[in-house]
Length: 236
Image 1 (cartoon, rainbow, N blue to C red):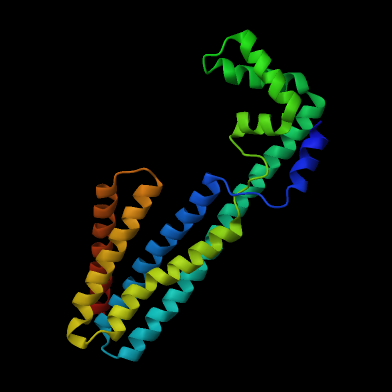
Image 2 (image 1 turned 45 degrees about the horizontal axis):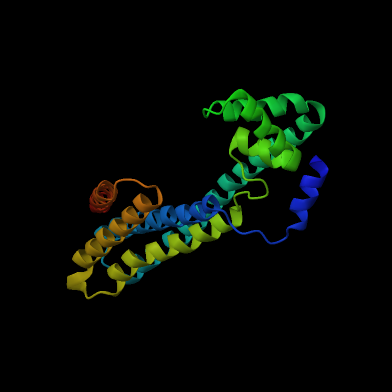
């Protein structure tokens, strides 16, 4: 029965992404964008406070943008890969338990439904029905809230983070290096405030959090980041 479940999943070459998978990719993108904005503006403010050489400022900002993008992407890849490996390990463990201790696995599913207010008799009937149809899928969803065959994709998260960190860092980089000299500082500050406000809005929407709080928090962090790096550059 377990072998049939696994074989059926392997035959399903093309699987639609679950909402969790899509949200994980979007989350990586939002976080990457925010980090790209703040790290690049931090370097730009430090360097621009220490020198007025536009080429030096541009190269420093561009180098940081590239480094940040690849750092965020590799971090997301490692993190999501670990999560994927953990999920696969849990599935393999449950597949083995279904072969060696099916009754306990059945009892686990029954208790799961009992805990949601279903009577013992009805819970047993539900558990037996589900386990007879797809035991492995049922037990991993009950125990670990894992949708069998739908593991987080580390490549999706990595590319999402790579692209968004690069895109986020472009805003302060362009403002600081391509605006007229008189507008460089105020233009960069405005670009950073608007972009971190946007990432705050998106992160709140994705996480079902408080939009206003997230936007204010991101703006405050952005201003503090610019303030600190500017005065670090002034020291030299």
